[in-house]
Length: 80
Length: 491
Image (cartoon, rainbow over all chains, first blue to last red; front, side, top):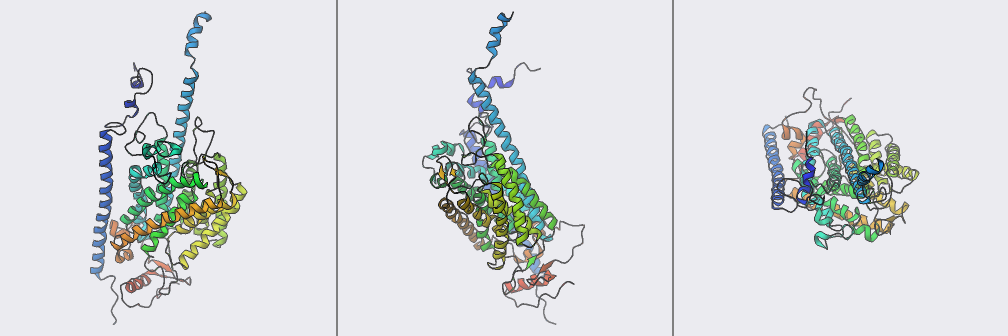
């Protein structure tokens, strides 16, 4: 069914791998503008995730601690 | 007829250069496949750590404990991709003195390890970087998981994630650059020898965990008013022991991934310093190391199940540094001592130093990790290490220990101190008493099982109901007077 293996078109005339094809990922190869932009976006997403872990957990813990204190369940029983 | 076909046959015979290129490609793909499967096996380490710690946690903290192990992957993976691997590539000589052309031993590795480089994505001309990166990443997860068990049941998930990213993507990989690479300054100058990462993974993670524990403090009720240690009952010891066995299984992948293989580039198997060894040599040592460690742990703990299995881990860690050169009988003897050292040091840390390490990680990984590289100085001195053929020696081993102890301890202590000052290190006391799972997830994770009263073991061995003890400790910590405790003694 195939009249040509796609790999053939990835070669230069001397049979070596075409450099642009060798680095075949999205939005350009190593050091390209596309790769820089993706790197920066990924790094930013990582930092935002850290921020989110801290903020969201703090909100949950504070809410639960306040609820427990308000319930009186952890108060020391008074004498009598 | 034949004479007419001969020219076309001859034309089809590949040239020597073409055969070389094919063999080199096959060799590279074989190495790629090998490292890929070591990573698959190493996943079991993390399955094991999750089971181990989840079983050691009380029922009220089981999911929050497991979530730490899961999210270790979520934070260490991107941080290691964006800067951890770059640190390994650039800091082998102490700093990148030739910029992206560093280090001298592996020219250009610094530049190739940058996240925007051509090696750090799909590349038809590079079969190795991706899987080698992945193997190191799994080591990074392991360092985080080692700390993870020590701090369970009171650390904030977010604080743990910040600390584990620091450990997995900065601290351990910096020490790997210095002392676990062919161009590391400790290796090329001092012959530092830690073949299968006794110190660079385990010891450093244990020292890091110790620094965090000093700021984190013990779990509420862990110590009596006069400083005697109580014991908490883990909710599922069977799960803990199964987790340890899964960790042991994963260790075979870990051990294998510590070697270098690519037949067209190197003559057979090499250790990380590019000194020759064999896969069989390290397989012998790891297996007999478990045997010796179990034995030492069993005798030192008088048959305690937790310490018997932890002794196995400690035994292997104690012989990992010299696993490429030890005779199996030597490894057996040394691993017995490693299992014993873990039990004794774990008891000392808990009862004398009063540091609440929930799973004995500082003793098993930290103490035995340092012990392992010390043993190389004693029993493998004179063995040439690395590309400069510097002989390993006690001086070189001590140099590594002196470099790595502050490298691990100080960042851990400093960052956990800052988090503590910001009130972001530890969960509120009320949440700790109720259990972290209710605050984090709003549910109990064994809904079909009756909830029996939690128990705690007093220093004299009595098993009592935990609630009065924990409440009393809570009231004391909040400046309220103590009430009599221990009234809930079980018959």
